[in-house]
Length: 137
Picture 1 (cartoon, one colour):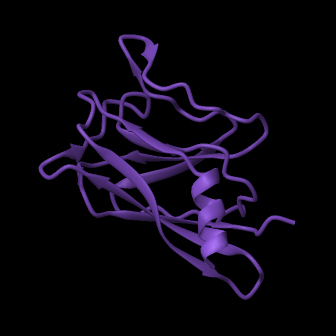
Picture 2 (picture 1 turned 30 degrees about the vertical axis):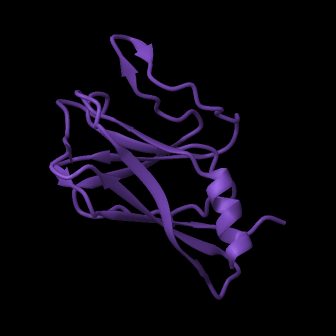
């Protein structure tokens, strides 16, 4: 199980953007479950500094979000979004910008799913999202 968790942490990179960038934001794998069909379910938690929140914008393009890049083996329809979040998966992950310039330069591998959870209502620290992944062949 520890090897699976280590592999997940190597594959997963998360980030978020806010109109005023959060002081500290962590996206971590909190649990990995092996399913009867051979897939794995990864539980992610988004942790914010005390008092910080993520807020929706006027549109999806301006709302706060969390992206996990290069999630190999995504099982279609397996991603969950807790109340206040909307899930999407895109070939190219959403990357935060400030004044039109990227705040990070992630390695975004083509043809590999990127997972994005977008805030639809204000969210405080402690909410979790889950997604399933098939084990590497």
